[in-house]
Image 1 (tube, rainbow, N blue to C red):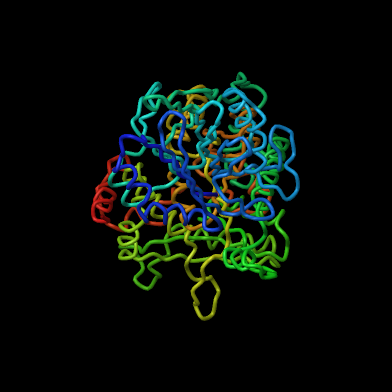
Image 2 (cartoon, rainbow, N blue to C red):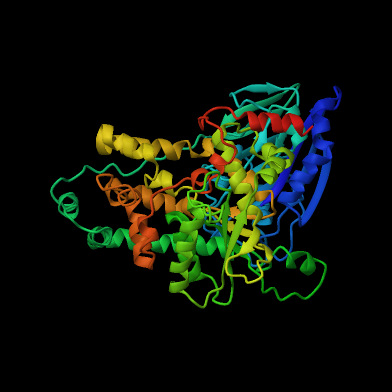
Length: 575
């Protein structure tokens, strides 16, 4: 994870407004929080009277030492890279031991000449990324994000094809100053973009991505579907899942294998040092790090609990795992003697913790209770979170963004700690369950589509969810989580996991004739049951804004799709 920034202005007409955005300390601080381990900045002049500033801030995750960005090769090509190449290869060519993914990518891009060849290299990368690449012999910049938009990248361009600009700003994050003073847009992940420099700056869409599509194999009413009718007759959830496993054992096992590979690649792709020990190592000390290096955003729900159980299988036995569980105070407690932070996600989190401890009692599970009071929520929204959420602006963006920011901060109290001492997770890798609901029909709207139009409508809805996933929330989530100097990693959105699930017929993944908490994401529920999480396997979907109770903290009646005045006012007050 890195913070990257490009600013291009005319040599002749000095654009003071955009230059102020580059030089203000807020922007630099926001980028440095994303990439605290190394930083640099260069200023160059393009042949056509344009001045460009390239700034890079590195969170060291690959290679023997942090790469100082921007990276420049012997031909004068420049790369700003905010990404992770997983499985240690690009297009079948393995990264040499000790070399970072960014340095290896720079070498590969140097060896090609055309824009098409550059795009072809980027498109075979397995992992999340956003980047800016200047090809000197073309005097052009190629920029964009991976097809799911897992990493943030903002610019001052509305992204219309053929857009003409007088100045250009591209950045992976924004501060209160730039969010308030500029109109920033998320760079669409539907295309890559080519930027040319003549009398004006011209932006052109290139390399359109193919839409996501799922297996639409015709449904057989005679072989698979009779089981549901019989299963619902006075049968327990355990019995129904067992019957499903008898039919779809191969599909469940396939999901387990590919998810294990996805998780393994994401947690091992780091220098095995925590946030505390990395600076010591970089200063020359011989460090033996025994602290947590992996954390999971953990509600105790299905998605995060499966990630935890599978992480346990591939992570060294002597390493601890941090489970980050966030809660906001209950406004109207039914039981006056109960804890004000006994929100639904806290209760399911503790329930899932019990199951994990039974699975592996020798593992050190650090269940971190992150309790957020209203005054701290108001202060941090105003000083940091509103700017990170920008340009997203709805009530839903506010609720989810604030809950995730506090969860990823990892500052709380460990369950079972006798002295209730404060704990701050030192992990630099944070796993989260994004992408599971979209692919396996976990939302209430999927059930509504199925009720109205059957399997064809459900397939259409799942395809639409995945085709718009880059537009909805992943860029926002990346800005929020990376603000703590941690790398958010999303195992359910690994390219090979997505491809595997897309190949499966829809009814092997979900059956919405079954009740809530059973038919939705049934393939994942069966995997949880098989892993030894029987109670978690039948937990209904609960969004973070409701499970953590942040949606009720400020006692407002509002719709999630409405523009959030709290965000707007926070940006104004932060000036």
